[in-house]
Length: 138
Image (cartoon, rainbow, N blue to C red):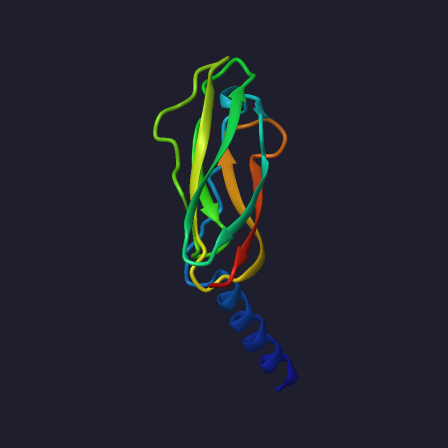
């Protein structure tokens, strides 16, 4: 009986952690398709804003490898942040950017937000972008 309870609790926790977003593990990539990325800025401090404002943030990167860089997916850490996935591969030597916007409505105080980026890069294929913003209540 205890093992059944443990199994049910584990399944419930896994479902809760998924948060209903249906995030799936990216498919395996052929090693010949991997490239390198250099983040020009992977962290940002947006300073102070008034509650209710929406601010944009750009994270710049460069393809420092010899193959096209493909950003497969971009996943913000919460619903207050929306990010765009670049639609075209980034050529070797070229630069690109991840655009995101943060809606501060109901977010008074210091906010530390993150965005996960999945790309065809050597080593780690999951990259974490972060920004901080202090929201001043109205």
